Length: 236
Image (spheres, rainbow, N blue to C red):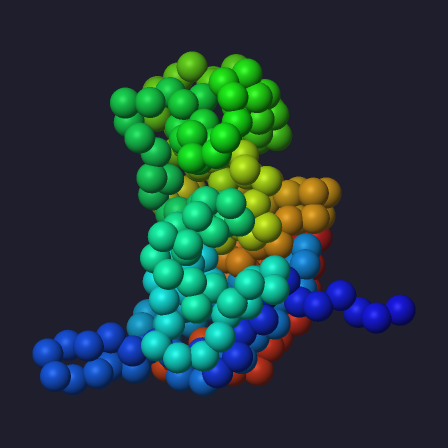
């Protein structure tokens, strides 16, 4: 049986930023494959390029050179409007500081990505309620962010990331603003999404305990990948 192609295939990826007349390299010659339903963690010191790599994979930024194929689509070649459409259909985002709209309820925050789709109101409600049930927040759907704990807000953000049934979930320091117990609950939820729903997750983290939940650890140093290290599954 032929092995399935990787869901993420990155080759010779580079990214530089211009400061005045100077070009500052952030990523150089990155090659990376991520298989479908894989959970990987990106780690490295500040300035190593891990958040830049995450943003390139998510289609938030565009590379200086190289290719990023996700689900067979080279997103490095998409124009800005095409990239925005691709992101809306294929990527769910989880951020360190939740990025919830304070004037919207939990339900309305989760519904936001669906407003870019052709779904009708009743269908959107079904999707939102299913996503909130998945993160065990059905009883908080009418609450505003300031009425929720940090952990509950992050679970709303996870529901928002899931609601479009994306190809890929990208998480940037998803436990960085949470206490140890709440962080463990959020990591349990990500692990559940990976193991039970088969979601492909790419997570940037500074926390070794968070990284230990991933199936593979990717280290970046000064914009270059160092050899992969398999991470032992967390027994909890």
